Length: 151
Image 1 (cartoon, rainbow, N blue to C red):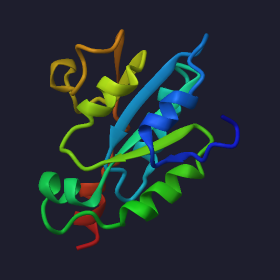
Image 2: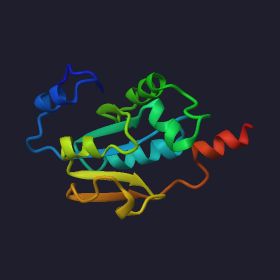
Image 3: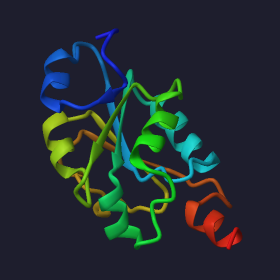
Image 4: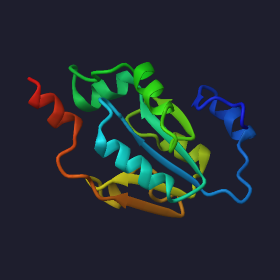
């Protein structure tokens, strides 16, 4: 899989090529609009929990439904490209639904990681994975706060 790109376009092919043997698969997701220290903290902590970190990123239409018409600030392509430069991130998959439940069902990760603004029972796929890990938020970092400061 060394030659497989970080940005996954064909999930079924990706899963065929993914070597799961003796690997702990960690999954997280989010909008990652205006990448900030809070995002980086979450990704670093998630990577520590396993061998392979898969990050699912909301597509632009999904973010508009969740956050309003003024979002996203950056396009999906820009967000994926920025995330792909991070050493902690092994693979990136975009999704258009409001939650990545279908991806979690397909991938069957060992661990599911979300930020401290979520409760376990609110996290899509919490009943599918072996472990849900909630990473405490870094105080003062949020895309919404960044946007409101600049307006």
